[in-house]
Length: 425
Image 1 (cartoon, rainbow, N blue to C red):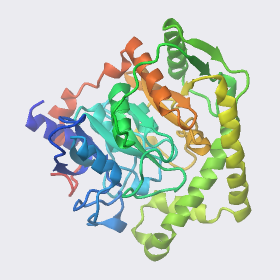
Image 2 (cartoon, rainbow, N blue to C red):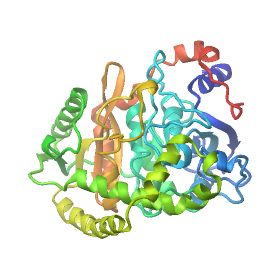
Image 3 (cartoon, rainbow, N blue to C red):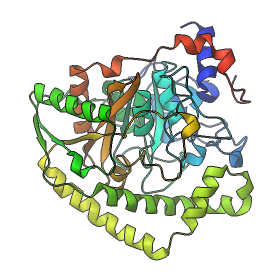
């Protein structure tokens, strides 16, 4: 694409809140890569607002370790992407900075997923090679799924979180969004500070557990069922041992517990801002924080006690396989006009992974009416390399990740569809 086309496309999709560029080291494993940052990750001197009026014009004093490792590895940091206000939401909506648009439909404005929506859109639209997001309850994997790209949530603690505005400490992770698992693996190694960059090769053998429908926390669209069946067949065709599990954790209960603790954690982080400047918060965030502050202490304590047991139980249960295969989200990207954050079930296949301390990757796995659907591979905490190796094997046998949206209509209509935003160049 020409520079003019890129500019028109970025404006039409409302991807960036700002687009500073920072050149990395002249040599390194990421030399020549362009990587966008979610706008809650600090780079010294950059305006970093985390999608909220509370931090309007805030300049970062220091560079987050995650961003610095990208620069040291040779990456060019290219742009700051749209996100949900203070990362507390699942569809990608933001009334203050604007909402990035899912690039797979140039006729109906659709959700990008959240909270790292702009990062997924930037990659799907080929505006950058990769992007960083943060994931507290699925905020990397949900937008990756809805935008037809690959998104990896590392094990908690694997990537340093300094210089990343928190949502719920104990649940937050920073990880990569890219077109494929190979790029995610390279980025994951850099972000983890591995002294010798050894991205895992595609797996050639191992055990894939499939989560049967009776264990799903919510129903899914027929296209997602087909994608899961096709993915099962792809792994079997590669020679992996594939078997449906006979027992499974109660994902609905784990999701509910995680919701309590994430809300409680967010309230502790955001309470000072809420109490001083509630009027400056968006409506959706105010509603969530009002609900969070009313959660009874005994409910929080019970969920916290259950979490330790749940993590231990998951680790024991997961020793029988290498990865667990299940949906990422229940369907495709909804139209923005019909979205209600309250009561959203978008994260019911993702949130529990953060709760039990696992790692996971969302993989493009098909289409439904021209919109992407996805599957997810989950591993125990510390099994990052294994999950990435199985993801690479799947993508060697399929080409869903190589397919992209038709961007010509967005480029042609950029000036018509663009909603003015003071932060866009």
